[in-house]
Length: 474
Ligand code: NBP
Image (cartoon, rainbow, N blue to C red; front, top):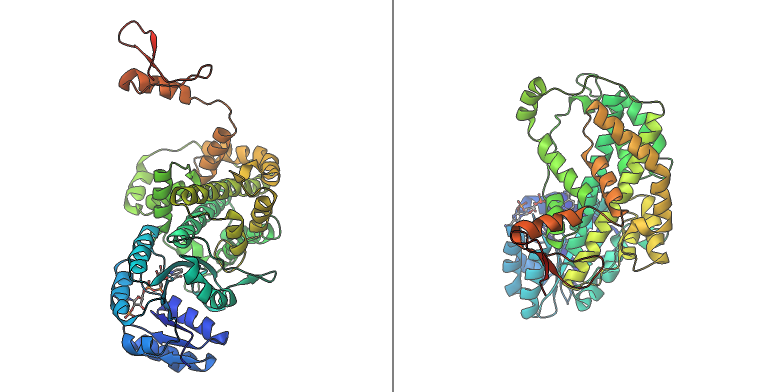
């Protein structure tokens, strides 16, 4: 008997995933390009389960039961191709490669196609939850052919987080579907964190509260509809005191947000699909602006803001409501994007399944995901979450507070790009008739791009430079 599965790439994610697999009683082969990581894993955690360490890929492959099941957990991009190229000559038809890193979904589509031509299965698999999730139960999003998923389903569903007896792992769809929804998950995570940061900024800059005070407020918010891993974590981070200075740690952390790219990819894909994911995109832009520290420092001494003012009564509760309403919009946008991608690539992704497997193990896990799951149970073809009764009412109840908060932010000069963009999207979405008629008129004027009418079928053009008579452009 060999190992049932192998993991190559034993940095933080691969090591913890291998330990998770072993702890659940599956014999696991482990390998890493540099031997030191393999040694470290065996020396430190070798007694947690049935590990077979290998120093070469040949030995690693030889130690696996057939069909061979290999998780690749290396840096996304070139390293994944390098590992695949090394593995392929060692494999047989029907073997299964599982890329568990944050690969771009187009790379996954390319790899799946190329490997299928050689009789090998490829599962592009999103793994969410960071290092803690990888060890104790992540949310797992495999994409690829049914034949590839079936032999790994038991292992993946067993090691995943479990919520109410349901595993946070499910086959998402063919080729790039798994990595796409993982990317969109990360995009939503960007929006979630930006909204939280804006709430924190408002409570600091407009309401004058300290980090520990705001941490307490977040702890209370975590008792209600906002209950989630990120809100709870915000309370913890804001309550943490820096050992070196005695100040709140958040006050001494440099205010430049970094990014690894999944938020940007989400926004890029949304632009290509023509889906307005304004909250996620604003979150990416906000990180980019935060990174311009030198320019901001110069600008802060030069550019004037408004001349003072203060937060109105009831502001803390209003910020909570605005955060919730904005979050509903961010998720509505993200889920609409995944549906659009699913249509574009013929993936048949079920949004209700995503809400179900994101309830545990991942960074955006939240009570809120239960509400999304219920919305898709009520209406599996729901085009936008805002059209569901629960979310319609949730936003309607919050909207006065939401408007008050954005109004206050504008008055006081506190930037709230994601709050504001979400509100603008909501107002745009709920309008039966908007101002795009004028845009069409202008486009027809300078480019003869034509327009359609509300009262007649057909495509029309106005002879603007001649007699301004309308002609049919069909
Ligand atoms: P890293 O993304 O830091 O990658 C390090 C691993 O890649 C090491 O095992 C390294 O081997 C290996 N590697 C590299 Br770099 N180039 C290689 C090559 N040409 N051939 C073979 N191996 C190569 O590891 P990570 O943070 O554990 O993340 C793994 C994947 O999981 C990434 O795609 C990441 O985006 C994704 N992810 C990470 C998190 C997280 O919280 N960190 C969460 C979710 C997803 P070496 O030891 O020999 O250098």
